[in-house]
Image 1 (cartoon, rainbow, N blue to C red):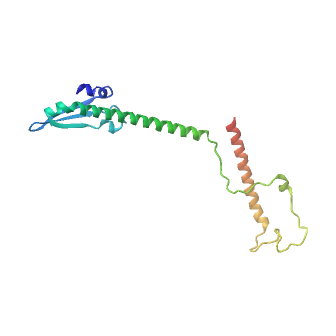
Image 2: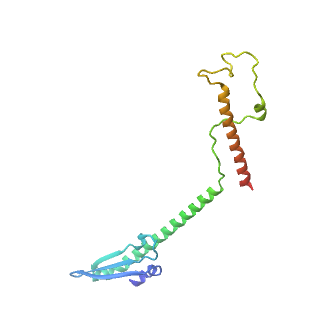
Image 3: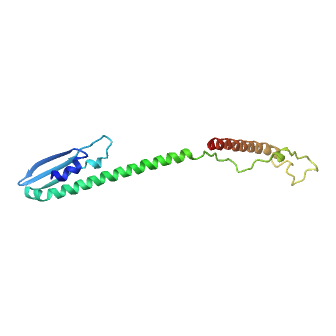
Length: 172
């Protein structure tokens, strides 16, 4: 039995208890001890065997081999899972650090070119029903709307200049 426990004993201590439970029955408990505080509790799951002394002599060795093999497989699986999670977290952090920060634009309106900004429309003919410079119902005029549009366009242009500056910093 101790030869079968050696692979487990190399990595952790094991508590063995042997108890007489009735007539000719004996219970053997194999309890792996925790190595560290944060260790997974599954690695300290105990194993208990109950039988006659003859049954335990005949079968306990094989049962301990199976228990130790399962324990070591679980330990390796947990270690691999932890390594994979650590690698994935590291990759995600690196990807986030390398990803350029982009600011979403509030309005998909393109900023006017400088030539368009310099053009000032003048009234060349009397206002008509379809003239965009004529007053709109409700007393609002397109010039009031154009002030708001100009503010939006200026804000978009400022955002684009900020993005270009950020991209230049990232590139260097």
